[in-house]
Length: 130
Image 1 (tube, helix red, strand yellow):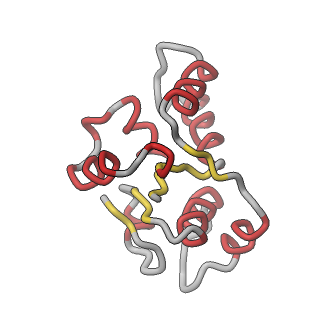
Image 2 (image 1 turned 60 degrees about the horizontal axis):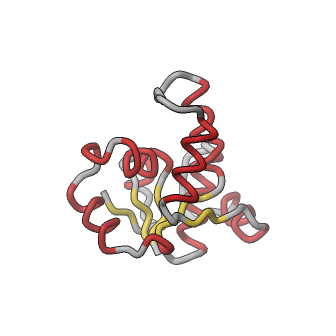
């Protein structure tokens, strides 16, 4: 199983050229049902659209429908164990709640986390790929 950070999920579907070779390779060899996102990534996606950080040629609802149902990706909903883990990450980690939930999701599921976020890459308590 691999957890995709929100920007990786977006790039994998809409801008695959943005992905580095290692990330592309890992996604290619991971079965679609083992490629997952934390449910908070849907909120982050919606915020990126609202703030104009990404442009869509279709409605956000249509993009989400495609990105979720047509690609076989799995959404891991925020459960109590992940919520608690996000508040009790070992060591020092920044306070961004979405990043904390994404990291906690990867840790709980003992999964690699694909990200380009240097703050997450520098965090020694989660395995990252970029």
